[in-house]
Image (cartoon, rainbow over all chains, first blue to last red; front, side, top):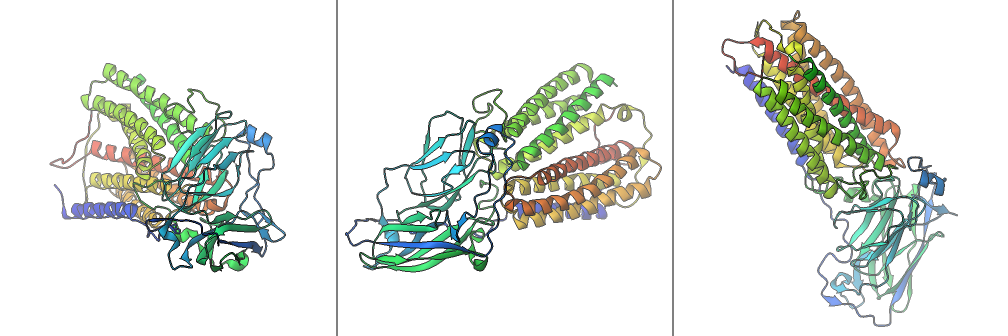
Length: 293
Length: 303
């Protein structure tokens, strides 16, 4: 016999269940912040005219630099032995200059009025290196064009797994024991930036900016960068730096003259607290229930 | 009543609880993809268990052991158990542990899609609940003759207990989904956190209502009051663990690696959640065992 009170309890239970499942299946808003100069189908092959210029600059870090955090690598004696002073690489600052910032043209217009996103670009034959050395990735931040091959090597006396966790590309995870031959991988779609991690050594992180064009650079130890061969035009140049959440990006409008150089200096750190966090663009669940993380 | 069978069922239950903890350690250490192989690890049966491969391959070894124990349990049931429903539950346990193993393989092969990971974690709880049920059914206390007690009050206690167990199970699904929605270095999605908090509120209300109904209506029935007391105690501890787990997870994205306090607390939260569920299952089974109305609506396997 089911009384009215019992029915009320059952209705409450079902409602709670539906609420829970609904919440689990809800989708975070997608802002599409990962696109870059290639959000529309490229139709014309880009041909250099010989009047290309460049974009160069320095990335500085203002304010107190958060100290690097010590990593406990004792879970793998090979790591602890080869690299006993492992630390986080989030803020590599020397004399106020910030390394490992990915700078790229996000979108823009060439001098002839055409959009840079309307062009396709040759894919370089050179492979982009990504080495696991001392139980950290070298380089920590790099860039590649869509379709360009990454050459993944393991220089450590221990096993690793290389795990790309992109949003717009396919998730890819592959074990690479010590002594194994190099592996290659390429990305099919532009994405800034693709996180890389090792699930065997969870402190190991790297980032790869994938663009449709070759107009990107990563700042060196002295904070400088240079993007060469840029066709004259006006561009939205973005500098991305890893940090809390999924990093911070800073945009800048830059005009490149014919055969000239444009300057683009960026600044990160405490004074840039208002900068847009990429966290807003990369919700934790992009495709709930079917998505990957 | 076969003492050996009951003891073996308890062994399987204990091993399953240990396996739950091992699985939770894999998630908290972000070790689920420490190898891209399955069922082997890096092509080996016994790889060098360093780094996070210790957790992932250790979990696989314990899972294999539990699978073998479950096969042995079913054989034991077929030989010694006379109640067909109990044998069928043993068969269900074996099918569940096989499905669980395949889901575990899928999590690796598909690179941890949320729905598969959450299903793997949920089925783990269901399997644990099944072996807990088998432990209850094979116990001397269950098979002893007992006087039935009439249901009192407006809401039948049996339904209340069933609702509590069902709500806890939904909360476990939510918890599994929340836990697998973001690794340690990403912030948890706030909508899932809120849903899990709402689930905790619902569990507290319904399990609390069931327990206090037991205390009010059947204060002298230790068969019912004991699991009710344990459930309330575990629930209180679980709520504290939940708050602590949230705080440590809130901090973990800025940590250089998964740190021990976060790992210990989140794993304890998973384990305690399983114990709350198990206790609610025991309470529900016992309520159906001894409580009767004039026209019983539900029956469980009894002696």
